[in-house]
Image (cartoon, rainbow over all chains, first blue to last red):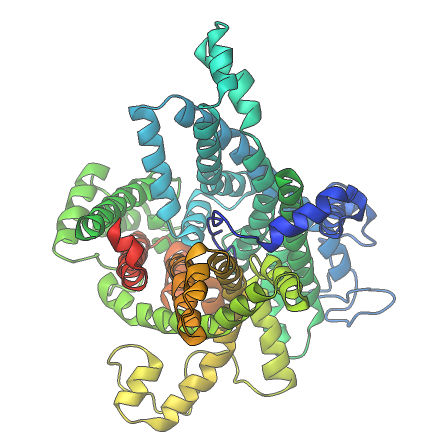
Length: 292
Length: 335
């Protein structure tokens, strides 16, 4: 479940701040949190690109007797249709990770642009944008995502659009807040005094200095995207079978769990859990390093 | 204080209206065909037209909207296209199930998280602190439906400590009359103690799953809030004035509560529409399961109804929170 993030409190020695001090003096390869995140994210991206090619079996056609427990032949066993669970688990990032990365990147780009405009040019337009993003944020996220996908057709493109739609307001808010503080800085005044037109000050000076919060948010948003994709597929509002996808694999084999067949649903779950944790850890580690 | 509350309520209401309008038009703008879903894709054109007419979908979107709004003003959320019963009555039976589930999870989560958060704030950098940091990072985003399944495997299948995940009561229990719709309260009111025990027996696993997920951020927030209070001047002043330590401890905890309460409220509002997957896993017929059915069946009145009710419910929670915080923290009232 994607828990909404709380606003950080203004002061106080938090663990983050303290460890940031320590971690900042450490080279990045000795920062455990950063390395954990980076390795998991690296593997996820690698599997998204090559998972299906290095899988021992075709993830979409039955390759053995159904419901075989894990063995040397089938590392993670086979599911109730005889599909190889290991091949499917490592092929799933093609769907889950690709989708989450695309949606996070799209919403970061769109959100940052809108946030820049809304923060830099204050006026009725920017107030309007903020009200809209308020309304979007007040939505029950999961139900909205479900409705968007189910009503526009269950395919990859629509999933990406739905997720982008949901995550854009976060980036609008983050960028706008940062732009609002940046635009009061003296370098902005200096840039204006040199005769730069407003749009140039906004894009060349304010924008690069306002990107940090969005960049930190990017990785954790990918994690949320993976989680939401898996959740949607789990209730039947995501990708269609027999696409190898973690949530779908868990949903299909969940009824077998109470009969003692744990392997077809446990491995994709561990994969989701680790992937989401990895992207969150990377975000957290980057945030620490940036803060110090 | 009162103008502030009124302003918040006003903004919230505007948001609810905005959401109502957006939902109405967005689901009609998307390329789904609820009529075909209802009568089947092979239906004759006459059947199709008849169904379309009975759903009111033959009218223009604008006519549909005005009739929707006018019945909304009379407190009528329409009739479900799939079950044929009124959406209001269906929400009335499903909402309490969700409310009970998440309220219990919150009480448990708060009871566990607050002391832990406070303990870690008192000894920053300690072992507990580091563990809690890792846990907060971990629990903030996890596939709770999968954790639910794992718990079912461990506690039902392997250990037998929990019932089969098939709803709120065992089939052989005489269910109490539905008064509030919450299994624990209904069975208590009707003095049906076997049903009460059975309801509790069916609740503990889903509650534990939700607790596992929501306590992460709550611990993190209570730790942050507590350490901020511990470093504040008023505490130093109280110590310097020689107040008894019991009184200092009390005001410390009181001062650290508001951010935690705010977060808990936000999470609560979020879970109203976010407990969907847990309800599915444990076959609870709550609002979440209802919304899944509504969406997958393209049941527009039910979709509109659930979204509106969830938004209004979170609005009420937020308002209650503002009042609660003002009661805890006199500084808020002064502003």
